[in-house]
Amino acid sequence: MSKRIEFYNENHRFDKNLHGKDENKIREILNQEFCLPDVVDQAKSDAFEKIRAKAETGKKDIKSLKRRKYKTVAGIAAAGAVFSTICITNPALAEEIPLIGSVFARIGTSLGFAGDYEKYASKLEEQTEDTEGVKTEDSKGKIDREDSTYSKTSNGITITMNEVYCNDTALNLAFTVESENPLPDTMINENTGVPVVYLGFGTEMPLSYNPDFKLNAPYLDGQIIDAYTYAGVLRVDLEETNYNDSGSEQYYEAQKQFLMEKGVDQDALTEGEISFEEAADILGIPEFTEEYLSSIGMPDPADYDTTVEIPEEFTVGLNIKSIHGYRPADQHTTPEMPGKLKEEYNEALAEKGLDINDYESFTEEEKEFVHQLDTKMYNKYIEIYPEMAEPDNEHNTWSIEGNWEFSLPVKKNLEDTVTKEINLVDEEGHGVVSVTKTPFEIQLNEATGGDYICTVLDADGVPLSYGNQGGDGRIFAVKNRNVSKIYVYVCDWTEYMDELKGYYWSEDYKEKKKEKTYKEYLDERAVLHTEVVFEQ
Image (cartoon, rainbow, N blue to C red; front, side):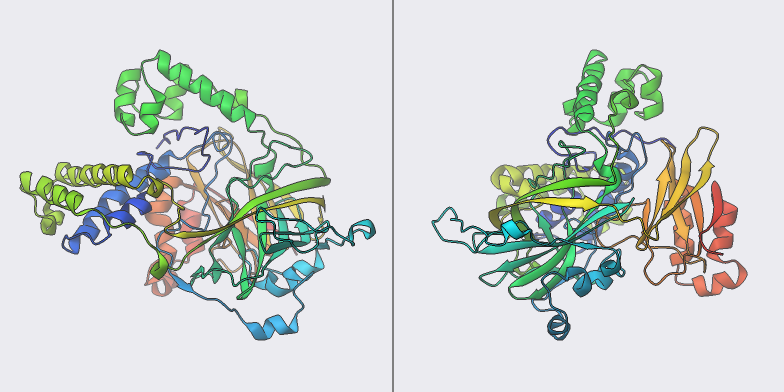
């Protein structure tokens, strides 16, 4: 099964589904006081599930055309996560460990990629000439606290950069946010205990080896210490940083020009005005996939790929313009769906002779009609409330504006980091070429392409998990796991999603493993697999 291409969007580098809308946002809006029977939730769920499945198989930005990425960021748009409001977390522990200068000591063991960061991290200590600091004025003329090299205050919010830890896999920046006034109530993911806090998407992060680097996932992992203090870690996948974005823009333009010459308007395709099936028909190919597009002369993204080498020592610039958090669900102020649109929805169903309570008996054509109707209503809703087109908006998100700018020295610490070459690839070179183990994560270093997804079992045959924030299908957390050896599996994407992973997560796995363990099951079903020994 081939993957459809997800076009690079020159203004937004995050993934969207095939219709260019956020399915969770549509659901949220359509559920606002919508006067339909409860079964409509299932109707919409089924329709959107199909779209999501298609979108998942089509996600490929310019970087992942070079190497497969399966982002599983646990952040604002994480579907199905359960949230609650927590303002103070474990104050007794906070009293035991001084916070300033010891963020990793305070929260290191609760991070998604957890562990003893204190052993490996470098403290950011002020230089002598900077200790006097300077007084600054905010936009309202208010005198802020004294600034120094690693502590900046703006609009009553002081951000202090405390520690840095960098290995061959990730850069981790630990810091505190201290407010003169109580911080807004914030959603907490009950599954992970992580407050949904993130830096503004306008945050700049120039690197000495890549000044044009764009921080495209500024989600944080941390804890709310008390009503006035947040301690967090910004984790950046280093593999994201060695890519120069200028190549993406050039490829996007070449791709757009190629399709236009063939009679396909890429903008119309991205916005869902024409379908991928219609585009394939126009181009005279069976499917709108990499392979078929390449066969008719589509520009090769590898020709536009520009990468840079990551040195052992470098400087990180961090210019934060805003801090955001997701409000608790009971504090959302999402505008209600107007009554006129509700009536229009019901009338459209009635004209088709459809009763939404009978959704399960609908034909595929009728179910598609329901989906199209949902999308049509969403678009009209957005015309009335354009701010709701953004996943993060004033109705569900709090924000604090300011200006906090830092320059941070970084030196890789490769203690207890080891890379093993495994060359687990198919005849076309698709798969995993090596594995890197650090004190906090296992990273699969993948070769180009392939319709695959990878999974890793620990020495006990138990699947490793992704971290709370910023994890993806190449990087696995190792806290409290036996990783003296691991088992790496390269699986067919569709087979894994539809069947393989369900074997382990099924309710009756305890019984099934008496006959066949998950490891034995994967040994039989995986396309490729191998054992990697780190310790004898």
